[in-house]
Length: 305
Length: 175
Ligand SMILES: Cc1cc2nc3c(=O)[nH]c(=O)nc-3n(C[C@H](O)[C@H](O)[C@H](O)COP(=O)(O)OP(=O)(O)OC[C@H]3O[C@@H](n4cnc5c(N)ncnc54)[C@H](O)[C@@H]3O)c2cc1C
Ligand code: FES
Ligand code: FES
Image 1 (cartoon, rainbow over the protein chains, first blue to last red):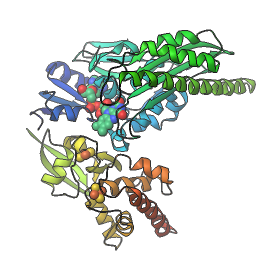
Image 2 (image 1 turned 120 degrees about the vertical axis):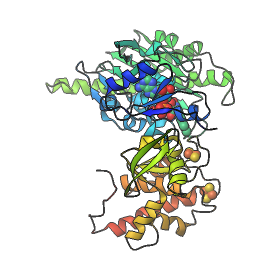
Image 3 (image 1 turned 180 degrees about the vertical axis):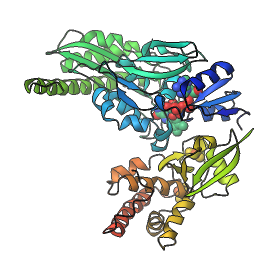
Image 4 (image 1 turned 60 degrees about the vertical axis):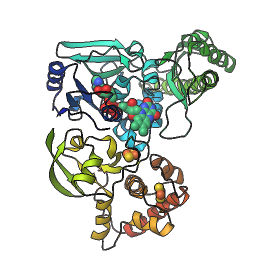
């Protein structure tokens, strides 16, 4: 099938894009890398009258440090760029891992994080990392800017809090504590060009030997990225021994509501939730400890890392 | 609806009127006659349509042609032309594929070779694991992959030999 007819715009700045979007909404759609959109257009799942490319709006791409020490990720940043960005690797390693795993090299060179979040599939691989890091998403329209929690942004398969006349214009990751880190674990049938059967992402922050903060998020086991509060609750305030981590992983199974499909049965997915959560927590913990040691060394040397 | 598209294809700047909904693969094959680019799945799964966009491999079936405005596209024809410019009939990666028997029906070969060539520009001395990752978005229904991987590693060696003592030949690589 061919795409239905549409007009095409490639604005050079954000205001122009927002004005066009607002004028033609809800019949206008944004195009980022197009890896989801082109399929929808060709299958005529979407029949916009106007496609607005975001590719030439410089403020929308790239990763930079925010004034508060966090990270500002532009929605047009590609998976390839995220996977090789040193700031992301340091402050949000789960995000670098998720971006580096998805699709194929060709897809990663086009696919953007903004497209992944706005397309809002339950298997969207960058959503759980963004959620466990407590990110806030900036939504802009002609009328102004608002912010929403990444955790509440995706409301169901393909559905988000974004209004049709709004664009996602920034993903804001808060500063990372010196003793905090994250990890992403996934299982797919093949290593490339596969949709995630189940993923688990964990973020941990330590204070001395105890867990000060914990967050878990699961992919492909519910209508949207599924937070894992039951597992996180097991770890808060205690020492993260291997036994506690195993307990937290099995508690997390309660937070999943998987379905049977051709990629795997619901039972198999519940099993994967336990295994992948345990692995993600274990690796996040090792990274957090490493960062904590790095911070101690920097302090001992009289500087701040 | 048609719009004018300016881009550089295989080193030559050109302008062509394209449908707004046309993919880059459709324009390369249909409007420009560059049929070396193949279309298998049309959905990003097989990599047969791989071309280099500003030097990076992409699935041209998933790029709107208009998204290539102002950018540089390299197809398999462009790679052959680089070989010809160096006085050979083929680019060294193509030659290595022929030599290793990495081509059977040939449908995947243009995409495979462009993915391999992009890897070798970015990483002239890859490990086998690097090659497997770089080619993971290209499916081959014939060869079983092993010879393709061997060909890519052999191409790395032959490029290293031909570049020894010649640092000027960095054209098309990353800055
Ligand atoms: C072969 C293949 C393999 C894939 N593998 C994976 C995988 O392993 N994991 C995974 O998660 N995904 C995968 N995908 C899906 C897809 O590549 C990702 O979801 C990708 O990140 C989408 O980004 P994009 O830039 O291509 O978005 P587009 O297709 O351009 O846009 C997607 C949607 O988001 C909207 N949009 C984009 N940017 C914005 C913005 N800034 N503001 C508002 N709306 C916006 C668009 O209007 C559109 O509705 C795969 C796709 C293919 C073709
Ligand atoms: S034809 Fe483009 S990936 Fe298969
Ligand atoms: S040689 Fe036939 S598909 Fe690869």
